[in-house]
Amino acid sequence: MKNRPIKITDTTLRDGNQSLWLARLRTEDILPILPKMDQIGFSSIEVWGGAIFDACLTFLKEDPWQRLRAIKERVPKTPLQMLLRGQNLVGYRHYSDDVVHKFVKLAAKNGIDIFRIFDPLNDVRNFRTAIEAAKEAGAHVQGAVVYTISPVHTLEHYLEIAHQLVDMGIDSLCIKDRTALLSPSRTHSLIQELKKNFSLPL
Image 1 (cartoon, rainbow, N blue to C red):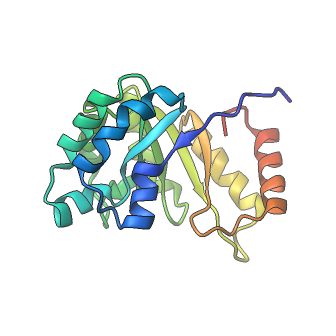
Image 2 (cartoon, rainbow, N blue to C red):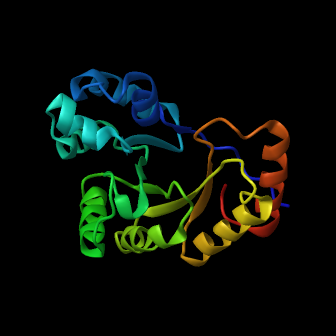
């Protein structure tokens, strides 16, 4: 097995902001630190998606698109990443395929380089259109497999989901452990099998 260097994605401004601050950091709060973050050498910086879009509109009364453009201006070197809820985009229901294509195209045009795409139920049907749209936009597509524990969420289940995402053309794989259930021993088993079966970055 070929060793690859470990790369670090910073999620402070998206996941940290969302999980610790309910996504209430204003654009003016985050802009000053961006040039310094751009110089650190992160593989990418996750700055958009998840609940950020909704919070900008609903609570902060800000334009989320303008936020993205302002971030891109101050982060010219490091790739910008967003979390995309598959067919739900950044909302709370399914959107039509044409809306998904248009949204992803505009997100890429305004500064997103990497789309981390997931579905909370690992329903691969909800990945397909978003993956197609991101590939058409020339972006890097990261397929995120959501981890949980149940009788149906076996190692074989995760490998099957990963196989289907790889067949759809993703560029890298992610294990999304949203509820901190992935123990060291389970991590070892899952990573070992994923690396054995796939050559994509993980």
